[in-house]
Image (cartoon, rainbow, N blue to C red; front, side):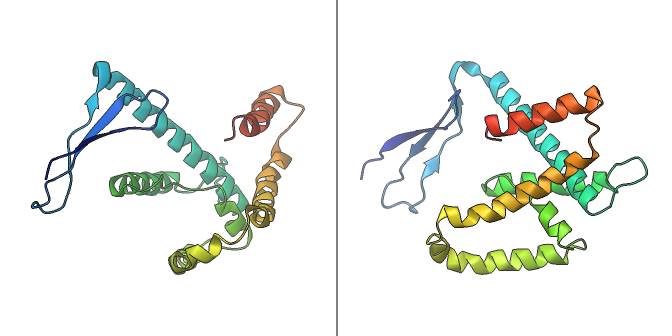
Length: 193
């Protein structure tokens, strides 16, 4: 049996990583051999910039989510900062790295957690129950595909309305507060973020 080389290019606008995969002969263990990525034009600088970009995006996303969720749970200290934010950031970074090592999509905190906190989930028991429900849903995934996307829209709209509650605390007479908030409110839907 001949070894058939195939090339898989990473799906990225810069598309600078090319993975080469060689199929193993039939008498081998059946596993394919994947060689190390080769970088076109020696663009290790591009790889470092992308890693830094993703790290910053994840960090600011997590900080914003922590502030919003802690505000909803009344868990802010006298300075308006979340209590034990360093522990929360360490937990998120460990989860993100663990997810990347396991090859899953990004593991991070989600602002949808604010709806759980608003409903009273603050101790972690709600998270455990939610994870058990997700495990049960693995079996029911084919049934979930039968539900049309328009049926899930009300839940997403509700979460969006909960996210807008933080606007009550913005002083719209102060330009230092109003301009960043206005840019965020315009930028998020325009950039599909």
